[in-house]
Image (cartoon, rainbow over all chains, first blue to last red; front, top):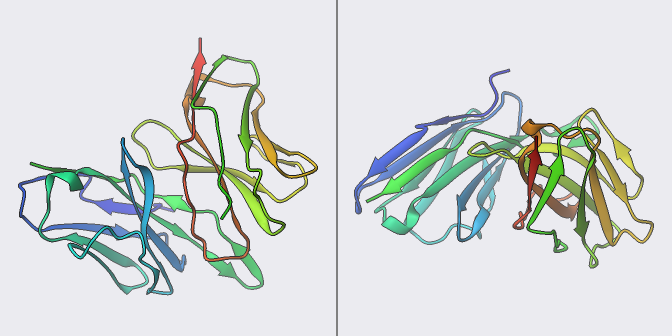
Length: 118
Length: 111
């Protein structure tokens, strides 16, 4: 099992540029989460999907942020235009959700994308 | 989801048990206690969870008080690799799978 895969692992960009972060969840998992971590605010949930449908995006900071999940094996988080305050580590996580009658909710996190906006 | 309170930092000698406390005084009857840890620069890692009974797995033990207002994560024989930030989370089960991470406890295991 390859685990949750995120790309790129590091991204340095200039203010105003578009940034796209990518995530491949664990195969068979039906829920996917995007988190942001900074020193000031800790680990924050931005948005999560269940069966490719966005369920809760209340953590998305503003309209510059958007997330999509076109299929069960891929999701993107886009920032356009990027600003220096968006500099953070962005984590993607997935969970099995349900398997038969069993609810399995352990979240498996990817290695993160370290974003620096200059 | 109920809020949690954890000490910001703790030290533990290598080989000794590490006992990490968590207060969750507003926990409701259907809220589970989850523990995750984050080793420096990595994504958080699941450790254990429970409702009201004590739980044990290969990584740790979870002791929940009878009134469920607090819990303790126990790493029975801490190693240097257990140095990490430990997060205690309470959430509704089953629910929306949404976690709210607090500030956690930074555990340093000393040689």
